[in-house]
Amino acid sequence: MIAVVKREATESQVKNLIGWFEKQGIRVNESKGEYCTVLGLIGDTTAIDIDLLQGLDIIESVTRISDPFKKANRKFHPEDTVVDIGGVKIGGGNFAVMAGPCSVESEEQIIETAKAVKAAGATLLRGGAYKPRTSPYDFQGLHEEGIRLLLKAREATGLPIVSEIMSPEQLPVFEDIDCLQVGARNMQNFDLLKALGKTNKPVLLKRGLSATLKELLMSAEYIMSEGNPNIILCERGIRTYETYTRNTFDVSAIAALKELSHLPVVADPSHATGKVSLIKPMSMAAIVSGADALEIEVHTCPKKALSDAAQQLTPDQFTDVMGAISKARSII
Image (cartoon, rainbow, N blue to C red):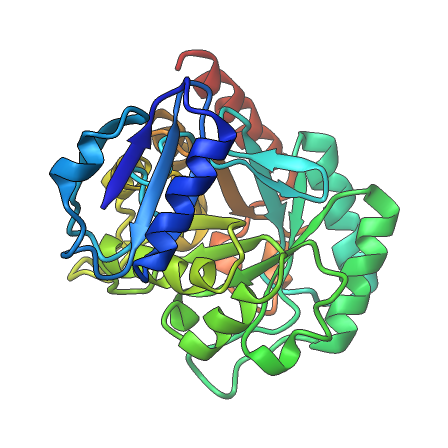
């Protein structure tokens, strides 16, 4: 249930109303906007008399909703959420580009790549220290050494870091990382989601390989229900019957998520397509669809990359893509 409070309501009146709801066993999510305050009522609201509420002088409207995701729901929070990652803002009209290699492979590689993507206009550095791979024989990342090298790259460039975490036990290792990425395979790792909810770090939550939008938002709800509101949703392609691309890029998901939720939405055209040639057009499509940010894989020498070589741009290719991104943003 959602109760919209009139703009002229006093802080004391709103506080008293929230207190009354809580006495009924209802949790209240308060969202203060420029023109009104929205109270999201979470719990069993069947006993709440809508007519009684609507009769209060301070109430603008009351609506029952059936969506199971409450905190992530735009109905509960009409204004866009802005997530700050080390000083870089995403959402609410703020646009960002996360770029860097699939995996951290060496100090020279990550620092050289970080400098290259920053020079091209990227505002965040992405890089995997822990790599969940389909085959147990593939490169799994440098682990703690990879984290150390990412921090050196941040020191060299000033770019905040986005890197994937795989389990709650790794949280101490990621203490100095600016944004924790939850990969597609871990979207429904509920123990991890709950643990991330107890932190205040920004979380980049990727859509699972076959997850519906509702399931993605319910995963975001797991994190938010524990107290962490700093969630960024990511469309990175889903599994369909198509085999030409690595995944099928669900561009409509970007616009749909912006409609359903107030959380920022990032598009990952690298994982979505798996093809260097498709990254530029899909980046432009994502921007036109309303994406708040892009996550793009870049490597100084993709042919020698230890993982996902086919989808990593060279620095020159990334510079070209950034030019296309700038043009696409200028027309929306």
